[in-house]
Image (cartoon, rainbow, N blue to C red; front, side, top):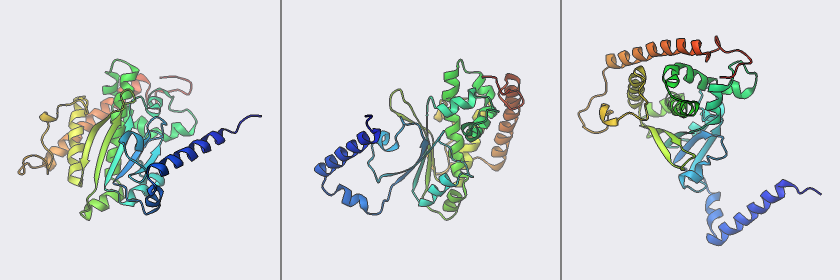
Amino acid sequence: METDPMDKVLGRNKAWSAARIAEDPEYFNRLCKQQSPEYLWIGCSDSRVPASCILGLVPGEVFVQRNVGNMAIHTDVNCMSCLEYAVRNVIVCGHYGCGAVKAAIKMPSKTHNLVNCWISDIRQCRDEHSAELMALPDLDSQVDRLCELNVLRQTFNVCTSPVVQSAWDKGQSLHVYGLVYSLKNGLIRKIVGPISASDDYLHDQAMFARRSSSYVGYADADPAEEPERPGQGTPNMKRPSFQARVDALNAFMNTMQVSNRIAEHVGWTDHGASDDTEH
């Protein structure tokens, strides 16, 4: 007779519970009380990226929202509702070698399945940065770079969400970070953050747009070459002027137009992709 796989799971749970009580008799009594985590983790569903484990935290210390591709889309009520729990530190964490990101590069855009629909935002990110991605030597490098770009995109999505904007307008303390986890060594790399106000977001977005206009990798750029953000470093440092930000964003839009033309040429967009073509 075949053994029920759940028997193994329940047995491990029983052993874990007994070990926790033996180590700390009051552990579950404390856990039953209201949770007050300092961190909200928006991460990928990949089973190799468990938030509590890689952060070295225990249950009750991190509030977790996971989905395919660590997405933070404004129309995703599930994800957006998590932001309403008033957690002070919001982390968007991707991971190198992400299957969703790889699918956004390789899967034909007209493939009819739910995953392909879900990753459309990553595909748009891919098309906007196609020139930079195509300059990389191989698929693995493209996937890893797009993982970073997707983290930036989703982090900025969090920053522009109504919940976060409302919190900042009220002067509440809320910090947003974009991180990437490496499966090769178990280490987390900070891509952007802390973003603690609308001015921080505008500054970082403009800075990223300027870097993208010259195809400079955001995470690999030298921070010493960038102006300090308002509230950091020299107290008298001013954030970029409105015109400077407009110029940077215009440069970014010009880059996107070039990138989209390149994407169409190599078959990365809906105009160039067929139902049965692998990219």
